[in-house]
Structures are given as C-alpha cells and as structure tokens.
Image (cartoon, rainbow, N blue to C red; front, top):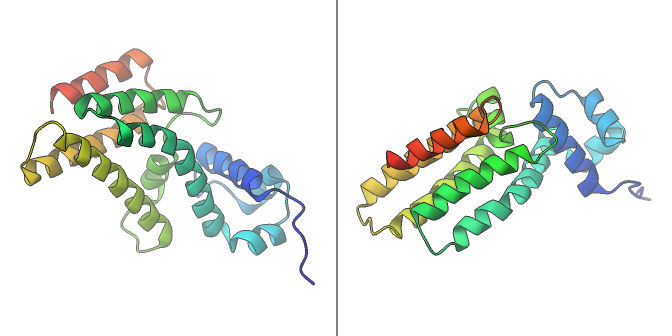
Amino acid sequence: MARTKKYNEQEVVEKAMNLFWKNGYANTSMQMLEKEMGINKFSIYSSFGNKDGLFLKSLDCYKSRLFVLINKLVNAREGMPAIKQYFYDFVEFTRDTKNGKGCLVTNTANEIGMDSEEQIPQTLKGFTEEIKQVFAEKLQLEGVHDSQKIEEQADYLLISMFGLSSATRIFTEDQLKHYIEHIFRNI
C-alpha cells in the first residue's frame, strides 16, 4: 500500500527554492533541505528522486514566479520600451524577495557553469533561450527586419540581463538605473 504524503509538495518545493536561492546549489546540503522543508530524506528522494530533481522543481517554481514579468513583456504592444520596463520590473522582483538579491537562474549559471550536458545546465540554457526569443520578438516591433541584427541585439539584451541580475546583489537602485539607461542608449 502506498504511503500518503503528509506535506504539500508545492509548499516544500517553494521552501527548497528559497534555500537554493539563498545558499546556491552546491552549498545547500540534504540536511539543510530536510530541516527547511520539514520532511525527511526518504520523502525528498521519494518525491523528487534526488537533489538535482528537487532543484529542477525549484527552478520550475522560480520560473513560475518570474512568469508574471515575462508574460507582461510578451503581451506588451510595444518593443524596446516594454523590454526596458521588464529590466526595471526585474530589479523590483529581486528586491521583493526575502531570499536576497539576484536571479536564481543567473546565480546557478555562475555557480555551476552552462557547458555541462547535465539536466540543470540544459534547463538553464532553455530558460535563457526563451527570454532571448521574447526579446527578439519585441525587437521586431521596432521595425528591425535584419535577422542578424535582431540576433545580436537579443544577445546583447540577454547578456545585459545576466549582468543586471548579478548587479542587483550589491549595487544601489541609482546605480542599477544608470546601468539600465546605458543599456538602452547603446542598443
């Protein structure tokens, strides 16, 4: 007979996400996860397979939070102004969390790298490609029809987002505003 879960899976994943976001992937141990989530290792392994499986679920949870901002950008009728607003909204998103500043995706990419063939880096790459595609679609609204130029500008914006994500951890709002304004002057 199968055992019934005595916990809400979404709640424990959110707790794990917060812990990974705060400490990083490598610095988050199974013992820390057990304590934070309020469940034992058996339950973690039973529900998520292993630490990687739990981390992937945590990334999904994070992306669902960020989806509100991404969806706003996707549905915007303007191009560059909407992308710029996304950058400002992202700064607010990082400031509204109790987990510290930064982006879980960027923090993880900086920590573990993106060159591995393992599932976590592949998930990170997939997510960044989704964001780049949204940027490219919005750039087309600016009347740019040269696919090479759109690709270059979308890359520039994506890499600028990575920089912004890291910068939110240590710089002031004024400094971040200056950074964002210069990004959009240079494109």
